[in-house]
Image (cartoon, rainbow, N blue to C red; front, side, top):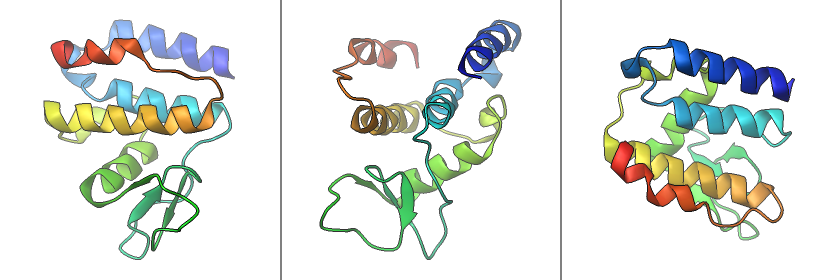
Length: 130
């Protein structure tokens, strides 16, 4: 299933128009995490507006045992992106700074769940291309 996801992603990445790929990297990260077994559960709601990055779920309040949280607009946008197919992300309007902050948050999420995942050096290049 992971191989199929990767090949289909690369194929569609090559076929889609540039303006429809603005949030591709964000959705790709979310779906990759899901396929690897640690996707984000639940959805953002007014009752559960905080994303607990360590547990991968939306919660009502922060917990003392978990120190990694996302709240506000970014928690809501992650939930929206997570509910769309890989190539529907362009329907969510985000500016360059918002996309950059979201990719930082999603990389932090991946780092929490992938043992030995170090610093992603290509992240320093992203501001140049976003």
